[in-house]
Length: 169
Image 1 (tube, rainbow, N blue to C red):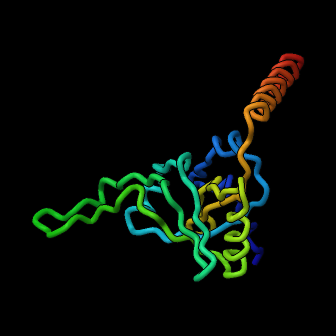
Image 2: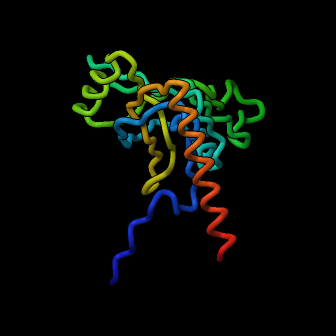
Image 3: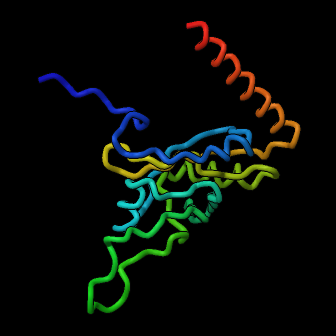
């Protein structure tokens, strides 16, 4: 039998949630794909695309090595509400800290990099790969105002070039 080709996360039926603001606000230095620990209703919300990564950031701790994702809003999933007459709610807190999964040496390396002045760790994308939730995080350095203007200028010129080429076709 022929092997099925590997799926690219961007072509999957699941949604890819992107943090477009991070690429505008920061210079991306290094990227890393991590797993994320989610509770039941959170998985359904991520599959539905009810996630906001824009305010998110990652804290890397070197001893013991761990990565925690803060301020990422994963909306409550309505159908997973409490059972009528049941005790306690089955819903999760939308902005609770979530543990990220990576190799020990990668966590230690990220902790060292995040201790440097001006560097931070931000989430770029959240998606499913082989049935597992993944987060693409990046070590980033904040952009100055003139760098942001350059980014806007480049984006507008690229847009004008695309318009010109489509008109000719």
